[in-house]
Image 1 (cartoon, rainbow, N blue to C red):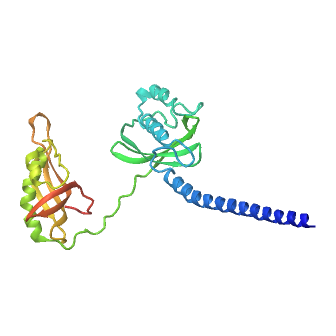
Image 2: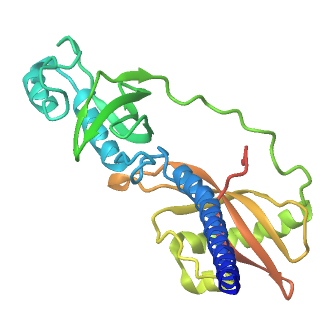
Image 3: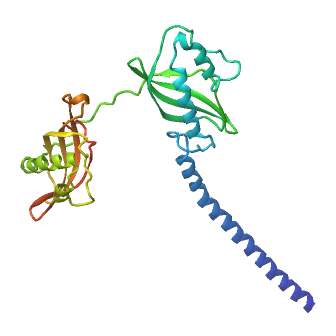
Length: 291
């Protein structure tokens, strides 16, 4: 009887130990799945169809498909009855076997592509995607939806493309700078009138005198400074502002002719030290309606 009691006690401890093992295993599974699930969702979002760089969430080769569709567009959107045979031969590298020789063109008229680039890749599944090419021809621009089928690295335009309208033109919001610092604008006008000629020439000695930050390279005489058209400075701290400056440049012209002028707008991060304003950084502007 005593021996049976000892066995029963040992068996009870064994069951307790087994229960603990099972419980800890369950906890580990829950924790691992809890960590993995959001990570998988994050990576799936980060590699969906996007703009055509890298494989998608389905594994579709978006970069290669974009390049393939772009090359196809250069053949498809250029036609002329005098070169129809050459076009048909070139199309064979892109279209399915047995497709019509001109892939929908009726051998009449002329079309000349002037520009084309991939705007995005909409992946439908592991083998299929729609590549959107933004193209210009005959003074018009539009989007071309090119269906691409891919399997084991091989690709084909799986159906006739579709012309779509270009992106709609957005309406800008109201100008962002309402409370302007007119005194600072007047003060910085003379600073900008000296800074931008140095910027045009890439005069490193002069640029260093104006600069407070990483070296400013300048435009290396690719343009000629004309005039600072406008300085817009919002109210803010007394020792730092981001100002918007519009500058007139004279562009180069061939054969000694007088070049045209282009007004261009910059954002400059300015800092004030010992009563003097310095340029910390210069870049393009995103201010709406910048003049």
